[in-house]
Length: 475
Image 1 (cartoon, rainbow, N blue to C red):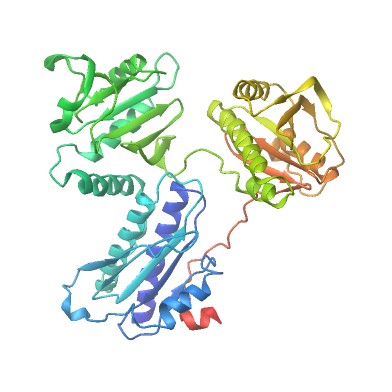
Image 2 (cartoon, one colour):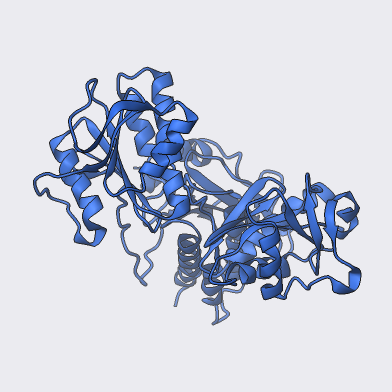
C-alpha cells in the first residue's frame, strides 16, 4: 500500500466516524474537509456529499486567492511531533467549522451542517476539534496497523463533546479551579432521566453548584450533612424531584449529594438539568447546551423551527407585521402539541376570503392575537380534525375534515393525517398545512408536496478515491 493510499484511509476513517457520530447527535449530517499535507502542497478537498456546494466563491477567496492562511511565520519544524494548533470556526453561512495545524498535516479545516434546531454549536465544535487532533495523530503514526480506532472514538463522542464544551465554558467564567466533575454529573442526569416514579417521567430542575458558591444559594429547605442523598442514588433523587415539579423551586447539588431545595437566582457556572418528562435539557446557567432523551445526549431543541412556513408567509402579500404575528401563533400551537406529544393539523388559509371547510364552525371567529383565545385554540387542536386559521389571524373552525383525490407522493407509513393534508393542499394551492405527529416531527405541506422532506444523501463506500484539489472542485 502506498503512502498516499494510507493517508486516504486515515482520512476516511476519521471522516466516517465523525459523520456518523454527528448524525446520531443531530439530524442526518454531512461532513467535508479542506486540507494540505505539506505546507506548499495544493489545497485538497474531501466533500463526497457536496456539503460545500454553493460556497465555492468563499472557498476560492479564502484558499486560492491568498496565501495568508498558510504557515506564514510558522513552519512544521517549529512544532512538536503531536502538537496541534487550532484554527477557529470560519463562520460560513449554514456551516460549523473547526481546523488546526500540525507537523503531520500542515492544515486541515473540517465543516459540518449548522442545523436550525441546535441548542448550541459548542459540542459540535468540540467534536470537530477532536477530529482535528485524531487525524493529526493518525497521519503522524501512518504505519501503525490500528488506525481505524479513531472512527469508533468519533462515532461515540457525544457525551465527551458535551463535557468538553461545559468544561471550556465554565473555565472561561470561574477558571480551572473547580471541584465539580462533569462526567459523573452527566451520568447522573441520564440515570435520573430514565428513572420512573409510579410510572411517571421525572420533571423539575436539578442544579449542580460549585461547592465554593453554595453559600450564595437561597435555600428554603436544607438537609443535614449526614442525611444528604447521594446524587448517584437515582431512585431517591427522582422521588425528591416531586418536591420541585411544576414550580419555581429547584433541587441543589454540589456534584456529590443533594443539599436541599432552593429558589431564586443560582451562582454563575452552575450546571442545570431541566427534566421535562420523557426528555430534558442541560444548561450552563441560562444557556442551552444540549437535550437528552432515550438515554443519550442530542443537539436538538425539540422545537420545530418551521423555516418553510416563515419563508412562505414572507412571499405572500400580507402585511409584514401580520405575517410575523401569524407565524408566532402557528409556532406556539405546534410547540404546544410537541411538548404534550399529541398529533394535530393546522390549515393556514392564505386566501383573502377563507374557504369553506367540513368541520365544526364558529359563530364568531376567535381572534388569536388574544392570549386567552390562543390558549383555547391550543386546547381545540387536541380534538380530532384540523384547525382552520385564516390570514386575518382568526380561528375559523376546528375538527375540520380534509379530503381530496389521491396524489403522487402519498406514503402509507405516514398515516391518514399526513396523506389527507397532501390531498387537500393539492386541490387548494393557497393553503398551507402543518402536520404534527404524536412522536414530535412536524411536516409542512403545500400544493400536495411536503416542503420539509429530507433528501437521502449519496451513500459512501469503503473505497476511497484520492480527494481532488480545491481548484478542480471549484471548476
